[in-house]
Length: 103
Image 1 (cartoon, rainbow, N blue to C red):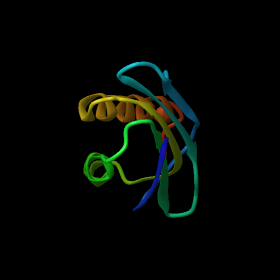
Image 2 (spheres, rainbow, N blue to C red):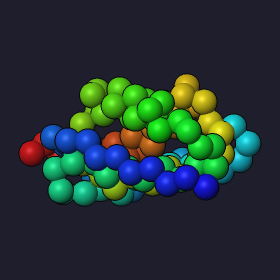
Image 3 (spheres, rainbow, N blue to C red):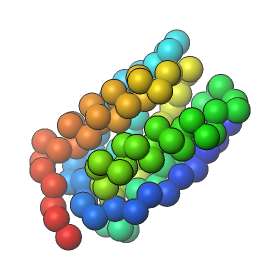
């Protein structure tokens, strides 16, 4: 199992927790917790090794559009970049139910 860590700058605080997806073949689980640190900390746990650059690019693209301050844990079981993007968007939508607080 490989553990990857990323940090992205943030300008908005996610107000509520989010949990989407399941750890299953070709899927992943995402847990988001609000943070007021001014950045997003992302930890990816994956059984698929050697895809660090792809993870980084997918996450960079997401955070270039959604600069949320949160602690994010991703538990991956071979999800494709498209599934990763979908699950991130779903988690953001769940976390938005309480809305954003602008800094």
